[in-house]
Image (cartoon, rainbow, N blue to C red; front, side, top):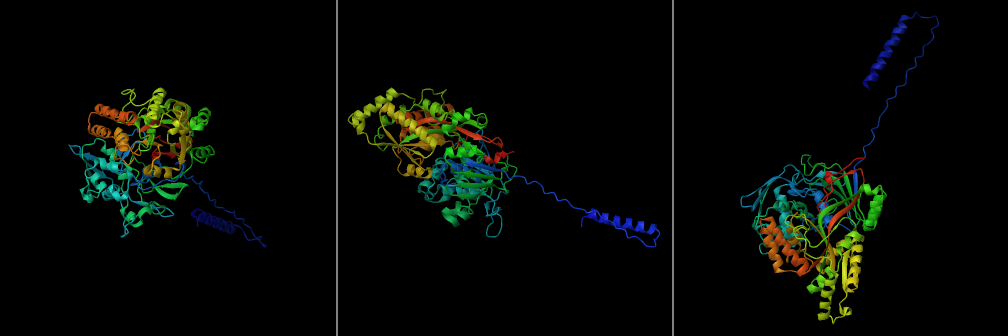
Length: 581
């Protein structure tokens, strides 16, 4: 019984006794009726605090993979970025390297040995169908992330049987990694990755690389759950099985529909670069641009990209214009050639098609989002990359007269001077409205300048990536965003003759030599000049690609979403966001 109510009853009884003893008895006593006040205890139900749920869009088509060793695309890497944390972390606004799972690191005097010291007490976790729980071993003890898990993840990425397309990145830098990846050595102990103790891991490089701290933080070098992968095989990334340790945990993956991530309650709150999440749940949907934007306007998405067809309306709308953000990101939009397929087995024909593209008209009349016409591939702003100030005449610009001249030369020499003798030409893009609109504009430019009809084909993203890996069409579209902020990540990592990202079938020993030399060069200005020479080969002399524009991100965000805007090519650090309604 409530204590205050007990004292009330005792007082009432005592008062009645005093009244009765003080009154003389009447001959015929009239019974007293004492009406007691009805006491009602008021129960106050607190107003429930609404859960913070963020609704985003990943783009059309299923996420290809959530395996850190296999991921190659932005959608996959975005989810991995939330579920796993690298040894280091790249600040999403400044691109500066910061501590991640490693509290600190040391570099040997010769610059070749990098030692990383891990944080302790961060558990592996999973969604058990009801809540996030810590993963335990066969003894019932909590599994904590250790240097052994990072070693396993790196070695698994490098194993040739894994088939990781990004294995080339650590293979470029780490001693013995290329040979292990190629299968010429089979003992992982011969790779320059060594566990010193449970919380210390060491990398030995072939040569000094000043930005290796960035490399060590990349997704393909993250810790991975060996026990789970050996048990589940390819199914380890599915709903209910996925073990991770980052600020968010995968709750659900409904293929071709959505992915749900929930905050990890076991993530520590003392890491400034990766804070404890404020938003409890993130729902990633898989929609094309226009349906996603319609959902944003209907209040069903909190952030969305702006379709090209809607940019003018959004800029003019008093409400939407306040929610619009146009921000530069370290990415390049480009078309590539399959140089083995006629008529693009001739560099002059490739250059003619490149010179016939009016990049300025595209960014002003089609994309309209503050993009810059790209004269070459590596995005200005990257370390050691050429800039329009240092190399204003580098690369390719719109030149319809020279395009016609080169086109006619090849036509006369190989096709009897008649455009009708050319083989059918196909341009393929992935099935996104914006890419299709850009392709249609370029298709028309080729028709007007060169008199060529080019067929446009589209494929769903996952299928499209497979096509590029197996049998690239004559012309295809891709974008490249920085993995680490250096020109090498654009030139060597993409177009080196042995790179898995090089879908052109093109290679040039002089290009390879220049980017190798630039990577070793410690003087940034000299390195920039070497990269400029490599760019000249890539986009002008050999014309293996058509650089089109340097990206911006054009998005709208609801006012109640407090967020950062990433320059990292679409990878957002959502653990830093909040919803304040």
